[in-house]
Length: 44
Image (tube, rainbow, N blue to C red):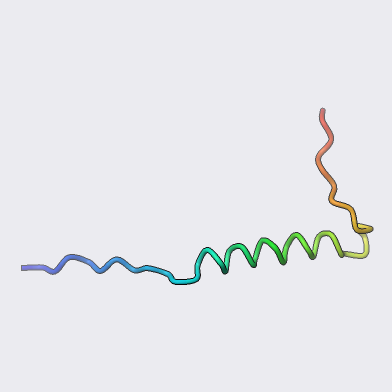
């Protein structure tokens, strides 16, 4: 008889991903070459 595989749950995974995205956005906005602006892609 084989046991069912245990389901692994991550406690703070969503919080960690939200923090990671926040750090990336802040780094993009505060980078010296960015001049503090969020650049959106121009339409074709």
